[in-house]
Amino acid sequence: MNAGVEGTALKTAAGEWGAAHGVHVEVVELPYANLFEKEQLDLSSRTGAYDVIMMDDPWFPLMSENGNLAPLPRPPDADFIATCLQVCKNAGTYFALPYVGNAQLFFYRSDLAQKYSLGEPKTWDEVLRAAKTISEKEKIFGYVMRAAPGNAVVADFVPLLWAFGGDVLSSDGKSAACDSPAAIEALRFMLELGKYSPPGYAGFNADEVSAHLLQGSAAMSINWPAWIAAMDDPSKSKVAGKIDFTTMPGEREKGVGELGAWLVGVPAASKHAADAFDFIFWATDAAPMKQAALRGNPPTRRSVFELPDLVANFRAFPAQLRSLDSSRPRPRTPKWNEIENAFGIELSKANAGAEDPAAAMRNAARSIDEILKRTP
Image 1 (tube, one colour):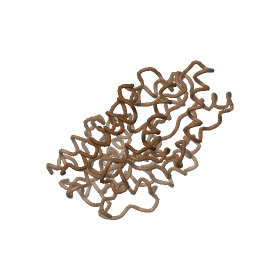
Image 2: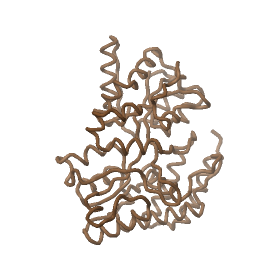
Image 3: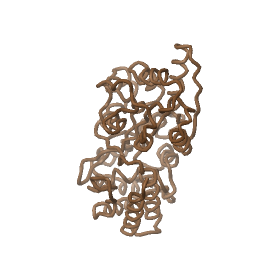
Image 4: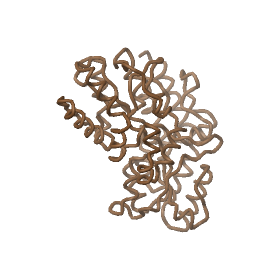
């Protein structure tokens, strides 16, 4: 499992299930950067070293290929949020269950929005205007974003890309589409936001972005739900209670956040498949999922999101549910990890000023087409 808040809740659940069933459960926690390689190696070599694996949803198309994951023995129930369920299916068959309902949110300083009559940002143009106003009047950075190569910059760019009417791949998924006029315009807009971001943002990842928000040195960003608790914790945040959360701004198209659900599945080579399936169905049931939510995990069940006591304790839950309902997954291709890396390198270069946006997008499209044409 992932070594982080998502994995912590699952680790606790595994201990509880094991104690109740008299089964010893050994947990292997790995950092995000190593988790994919370790799991993919186990799946492809059919070692059966793991009975349950935790997957980031973009990994699922590759991990569910060639019969490497065991199909679920029964279908998921209708309480799961549709966007979370859709990324658990390959060729009409479910091979995983959604455990963590992550979708991007837009974080903004509501006190400054009120002070300057800016309102909740509904469009990216409004975000840019607000960033300029706050930068000039408050002497802090109006915006902060991730633009380090790879996953970081792609995650922050894709909501802009979609809002401007562009996409990474063509509708059939067979060729790159990131060099379209809309896509180039979206990248130029990202660079405009960069003018109101801290120096060096082209090397930022989630920690740097969140640090600026927590210190009160930046006013707005795209971020993930895992950071919400810190924003409201006076021991961690200098602006506790002053940051609000909403769905992604739009522009030409309706704003949608990127889906980042975590899934649990059973490798086909598992030596304890019956117990493994029993555990993942139990861990994703409503009562254990409520406990995971209390430990910091956004749920994947609508009924859990709507529990009055949770809504009272987690003020961002309504915005999180709206974002999940409208969220969009990254392109569903087994080659996404390669594509994201190639795309992210060019996007980061553009943000660092090393490449013109049009050239960056042309180079990215060329690299992506080469990846897509390569035989598996």
